[in-house]
Length: 235
Image (cartoon, rainbow, N blue to C red):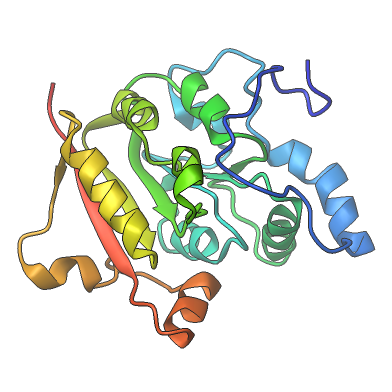
């Protein structure tokens, strides 16, 4: 068993560093006290109904993988109180930032996971999620590192298993090679279809999109973000 209580298993190398600048004392306290209250415990059997993970009544379930500083997760969970959100972020500083925001604006429809997202995906019940968000994932831009990109055949299989028929997988990135990579891999997977209907669709932000600091940085540096939406097919 790993120190954080999660099953001991080799990480699948989709993310880099786990800790950045030194945390403030209040952030350390939140990591030590608040995170255990919000953390999804994958050492226990998954509930047949994910609503049991949340103290608030929820009807839908949405997973965000790699939420960074949590801006998107905080916004979405605030606008849709009937949706249960699970946010994954192994980077300690990003988790601390979101916990600080939740300390100021609590959400009963948010649960968190601070380890490899594949552990959580393998724990979730079949057809339990309505949506999966993957916003500005680590692009691993060097060709020799492409195998570390989170979008791959194995993880698309995982998405296909946990998404309900008609469920949505959203992907946002400012890296052209990763956008092309994602389009190609999803096109090769039989469980998904790209929902774009006209050429401009993939450059228009998702409905209700609040923007993120990563996106703002990309635009400042002259990179045009892409927003891809894929639907889980029936069967």
